[in-house]
Structures are given as C-alpha cells and as structure tokens.
Length: 597
Ligand code: FES
Ligand code: MG
Image (cartoon, rainbow, N blue to C red; front, side, top):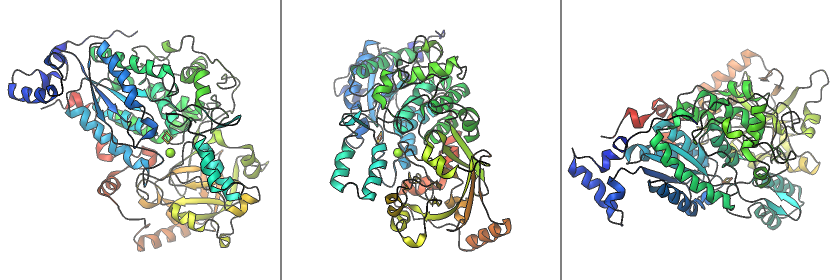
C-alpha cells in the first residue's frame, strides 16, 4: 500500500464554493439552492468531500441504463465513508443508434465532463461507464481535469443463448447478415435471433469495444481490481458499486489523482493486456486519446512493438468462443493480468485506484478455467496483437491479427514462398451508402481475390469515423461459400466484428490521404511480415493522380448536418492520434493549473 499524505478539510476544492468567508455573498448563492430540496448546511459546509457521480445511463443509452439504479449503491458507499454525492448527467452515447455515428459524441461528452468537473464544487468523481465511447470520454476528461476519479463499469449482459448455442452481442449480427444475404433466413428470423444476444441489462457481452474499454480502465488502474466484467445483473456488481463509492472518498483524502495513475507504464500495460484479451480495434484509438490527454506520447508503433508479440489468452468472442459471463467466472481481467505478470510482460509497480500496485492486486488471482482464460505458455493464438501497417497510401493502418481465420489464411496467405503476403485487385467504395448501392453490381467483377476498399469513412469524411470497413462480399459470392474478403479503409469497424480488416488508415482520404488516389482495378500488395501495404503503380502515376485530385478541389465528402459536426471536423486529429480535438490536447491538470475563480 502506497503511503499517501492526507489532505485537510480546508484543502478540499469544494471549500472555494461552499465555505469561503472572503466572499460570503457568493458562498450563500452557491449553497442556498442546494438546500431547497433538503440538503443541509452540515453536508455542504462541514468539510465533507463532495463527490460527483457522472451518470452515463439514460433511456437513450440502454447499455448503461442500469447505472440509474446502481448509483444508489455508489451513493450509499460515498455517505458511509463520509462524503456527499452529487449526480450529474453525461451526454448520451449509444453505439448502435446514434447517427451518423456514436464516435461523433465521444469528444462532445468529453468536453461536457471536463467543464462539469472543472466548473462545479467537486472534490472527486465516480465515472459510470459501459457502452463503447462512454469509457474513453470519461477517462479522457479525468486525465484533463485531474481531480481524484474512479471508473465504475456497468458490466456486460448475461450470456445470450439460442438453445445450447452462445449468442454474442454484435458478433451474431455480422453472422446473421451473411445468412440473410445467402437467403438462409428471412427478416423476421433475423430480428428474432438478433434479440437472443441481449437477455438482460448491461453492455455487449462479447469482447467488443465496451468490454474491452472497461477492461482497459481496470488495467490502467482506474477501476477497482476485478470489477470491469462483473455481469450487470450479478449481486457483485452492486457490491463493487458500494466499494467504489467508499474508495473515492478515501482517494480524495489521499489526493490520488488520475495523472498519478495514468503513467507510461500503465498505458504499456493496457497495450499488452488488449492483445491478450483479443480486444477491440477501437481500443488503440481510445487509449491513444486518453494517453494524449494525460500527456503521454503513445502511437500505433507502440501498439505493434509492445502488443503484437503477445498471445491471445481470453477465449471470448469475437476472437474466441465464450462470452463475458464465463470470462468473469474464469477470473476476468485479474486472471489475464496474472498470466501476463507471471510471464514478465507487465509493469507490476503501476499504481491503481485502490492505492496498491497492479502487481500487488494480483495475489491469488490466477485463471479458474483454462478453457476460457488460457495460460501464457498455452495460448489460443500466438502473436495476437495489432500490426501497424504502412505504405505509399497511408502512414498507419491497423490489422487485428487475433481474428485472422484459418479460411482467410488458406485463401490469401497461401504462397509457400511468401506466406505472409498477398496481392489483389481493388474495388473502391466512397462511404457506406455507395457500398450498399453497388456491392451486388455484377459489373464490379468482385471475385474471391478482390480487396474491398472503403474510403470517406474517417473522422472528417464521415463525422466521427464510421464503423464500416468490415464489408460483406456480394450475395453471389456468399452463396458460393465465400463469406469474407480482405477489406481496407480509412474508417473503423465494430469491436464485435471478427473481420481481419486493415482499418483506421491515416491520414484519411478526406484530409489528403492516399486512399483518395485509388481507382477500382488497381492492384495492392499486402505484406504482413514487412508491415506494408503498397499500391502497385509507378510513382509518376501516383503524382499525376494527386495533381488531378488537387485540381478537382480534393476528395469530396458530404456536408455538415449540425454545428457540432462542423466544429469537430475543423479540429479533429486522425485516428492514429486518437481522434482527439487538437486544441484540447494542450490542457492538462486543469483543476490545479486553473483553480476556480
Ligand atoms: Fe452499447 Fe455494445 S452497443 S455496449
Ligand atoms: Mg461499435
């Protein structure tokens, strides 16, 4: 247990608002309206820490909606430890419903949380998280403002079932879409089977972006150990909500802040653990963004250097066979970390919110079921992390190697002289509407060796960056049994997708990236060993195409629909830099650097 210097009640940040004899009028104004619903002067002025609870649940965000009930236990914990809870809303972010994409709102929610944490009388905060972007938005804001903060995941749904078969969130949708295209099922069956995946409250029960990012919060040290993947309906979920409430009050007295926890070592631990989890391809975007706000330089080369060599240990969909309920019972995140630590792959000294190091927290936390959480020496897949590919079209694009299937290997990585490379002709789509309109057009001549390319889907081209790169082959090919083709794009893909796409290509077409120069019929060479994707044309032809595009005014993309789309497009950074807002990234530790006035 680290030894923390306790702060005194006079040093509480909330004193400026609630107990400021130099400004009695201002103090009275701050206090009086809180009394109007029954708060007492004792609660506000006797030196109790004021703890914010950032409420991410709402009717619009069903994945997090049970936080509305769960925070009652958080409040019980805060009061038991001598604090005063104040709940406030986070801007809603629902992955599946928000148009044009939920990622548009990560930075908007981030800005909102920053302003609340900075501008209100809060000494610490509990950040309730769940659905994909709610977790990074909260962590980015915690890093920027840097008041004591702790993350409480809402937890995944229970396993989905159809008969004896597991049905995983999102993952089943990608599968059913193929069955629908092949004519095996009709629309009513599609909907009925899709709903099997959502049997209870909670977020996606696969290792999609939600479970990945909540696991990342725990690995970074920002949640109580073992809390990330407790299923939402379990009693342990309410218990850890209570413990989270008591702990944040102690963290305020100990003055443990996010930037004490979010160190370089913590981020390197996150990269390593993400590979072992078979985590979402959205994780590098969000983790790089949190690092950026914490003042840590982290890029996709770090992801490949530290993460690619790590084996897949979590046998959870989409990379594996089980779901989060079983993952939790097998030991959850601590069991993964235990394996990595024993193998010497973790910085064991990194601090966590409970005041102990991550290594200390792992005592006795080994895997309880090696079918679900494998031993490091006996993994599901070797070298399961991301590759950071480069070439003459982009500076960075990620490939999640843990999901490269045997079928994919046999069809594309089958040259005995060159087993990690393939070449193919491309067919190019400009955004998902173009893809849906044309994919079944026989004139495109898409065959089993075609590479599908999606552009105009990055943070500027499609505000926020669309999850559309995992493109399904034409129906005619699916009916022949060809269910996947290599895909490449400047957008993202869902964390629940098991497609080994090359995604997040940066810079994107809309900001001058080379994908804008591609033409259908061009040939690409993908070489995983060399980490390269090359367009096979002369440099002079590439230069000529670039000049022609410039004369036409650059790559065209749809206009803004709302003020925020325009504002974000004017200042958003590329996916490999975390898709952060450029002007926001210079702000750090703002609660101390810029005290209230
Ligand atoms: Fe919200 Fe997956 S859609 S967690
Ligand atoms: Mg998603």
